[in-house]
Structure formats: C-alpha cells, structure tokens
Image 1 (tube, one colour):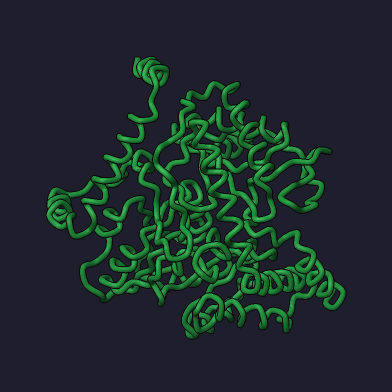
Image 2: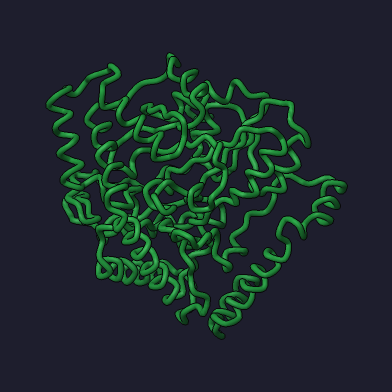
Length: 443
C-alpha cells in the first residue's frame, strides 16, 4: 500500500480546501461557507440554471418521473430533436458524460488528433496525438485522404478566451479526409446569431460533429450532434447512461429560452465588454480573449492558487488554469449580473492582486477589444501573441521550409501584424516602474 501511495501522489500538489456550496440563489451569486459570493466561475453565461421557468420545468419532470428514471423518456427524445435542429445537424444524442460516447467514436479511427486546449477527459478516455499549434497538426496529418482520422478542437479555449482557427482546421481536415469534432461547451447559447456556437460565428465546418455540455442551457450531461449514421451507431453503446429527466427537461426549457430571448446573448457579451475594459484599465493582461471567457494572467502557480482562495474568502468565485509560469485566473460573467457587480469584482481583484505581489501598470490600453459578436467574425485579440505556447514537437527542416514558403497563403502577414500590435501595446502601456520590474526579473 505504501509503495502505491508514494507513486500515486508523486508530483502532485493538493489544492487548497474550499468551503462547500450551500445554495445558488441567482443573479450570478452563490452561497459558500455561510456567505453570499458573486460567481464568475460558472459556465452558466445566460443565467438559465437559476431561471424560474427552467426550475419549474425541472420540478414538473421530477414530479412526473421521480428521481431515478433510467429509461428513455419522451423529454429525452424531444431534447435530442431540439438540439439537432438548433445545431443544424441531422441528429443528436444525449448522454450523462462525454466518456460514455467518445471512446466508442475514437476507437474506430486509425488516428485521433486532439488540441491540447481540450479538457483532459478527451485524452484520458482514448489514446490520441495532441497538438498545440496548427503547424503540428498539419505535419501529423496525411497529405491525401485514405485513413479514418478524427481531429478534435474546442470552439472557445477556456484558458485563453479566444476562438480556434476553425476555417484553417476545416481546411486541414478536409485535405486529409478527416472527421472534424468541435467542442462548443463554452460557445453554446452565446456565440453566433442564433447562439449555436463558434462554428456559427465563423460560418464554417457545416459537416463537423458538435459536442457540448448542457450546463449553459441550465441542464446537465452532454450532446453529440452529427450524421444520422454516427448517432445511430452510438445510441446502442452499452457505456451510455442518461441524466435524470428533471435535468433533461431543464435543458429543453433553457434551449427554448435561448431561441426566444436573444437579448440574453447580447447582455452577456455587453457584460463581457464591461469586464474586459475594467480589467485592462487597471493593467490586467487579458490576453487574446474576445469572448465572455476572460483570462487574467498571473504566472506563478502558487500565487494563482492563493489569489483564487483569497478571492473566494472575500466573496468572489473565479476559475483557474494552472501551468508552470503560465497560470491564470478565468472570469466568466453572466447575463443576469449588473455592471455594478462587475465593478465591485474588479476592485476586489485589483486589491488582492496587489497584496499578492502581482506587478502590473495602471494605464489603460489603447487597443479596443472587438468581441465575437454576430457578423463581426472576431477570432482573437491582437494583443494575445505573447500568450502563445512554444511548440513542443520539433519540426523537420523540410517541413519548416514548406511552412515558410507557403506561410503567406496561410496568414503570415496577419501574424506579423499581431506581433507588431503586441509590441506597440506594450510600449504604449509601459511605465518606468514596469521597466524596473522587468529588469529585476531578468537578474
């Protein structure tokens, strides 16, 4: 037992304990440890989880089906049909968890290529090659169709808040004859003219399989939408289980509200713009985000954990992404939150960040954020180039030459512009204090 425990806990750092969640009253607030907190950590952008109509739909299903109904109910079929229509796909399948569907799909492929930005569950349930840059994906894909290949990417990246380059990914997948799978968990209900996600916003990949959590609709579980043959094959999977009917009914009612109340989408993006401006005006680095998923650069892992814990103790819940030297907090506003709540949140964050020793300069950025609103086609902020992770897979010289030769056609001018824009932003917003701080770190 001791040998097992030693291996199991190697290189593991336990997270700081957090008090239990005691209630979710609504308006973007939660009850934690006996206190009322504002939450910017929940993937409930439209505030549907606490909407009275969604809760009533769940209550009605609970009275009708009880707490432990394992069969395929009418509400399940209604939800699947509604999701397929909303996502513009021939069919849809709902399950309790992605791991109940993904392995069956992935094991039928000769090769699976997944973006590292996808949640860990994608890679844990089936072997796959991971990539961080599209250059790596292009090098790994065959030049001609023939093999059964799957390429998986997120529509919106949780740790960055920008959109995947879906048009380019679609081109690479089409050239290799690969099936494209897009995770829309962070874009469902918010992005696109009808709230279908990043694919609708960028008007591409009409044949892609779509995966999404149902949390943004006020329910629970996941949906996979795509060709009828794929859905029929997965429907009989012995691993598949279903969310309780009450949560299915909640998601169905939430989806109806997404279609009926487009003002919710507009409001959450308005709230995101307010939060972006407040953070940037105080010198916080929000990187490439152009969505309601707003990262705040911290850097050190231990500092990020301490800051998140201190914020929760002071009445603000936020998300967190941990990576050596690249850790960040993640803030996600809701349509039901007011500008005053967001201002209070940023004031608290600034106070505790300074107390934690974060170095940043107060002057506002001159580069305005263009959010991913309908018909804007925004994909990434120009000041996010310095957030790019280094490529982990070395490229062969021939591949590098081909990349340089054809880079103009794939957007080298845009990347150069982004780099120049980043340097300009830093120059405009740097003070003598920033330079001294940077020199101290270099020593």
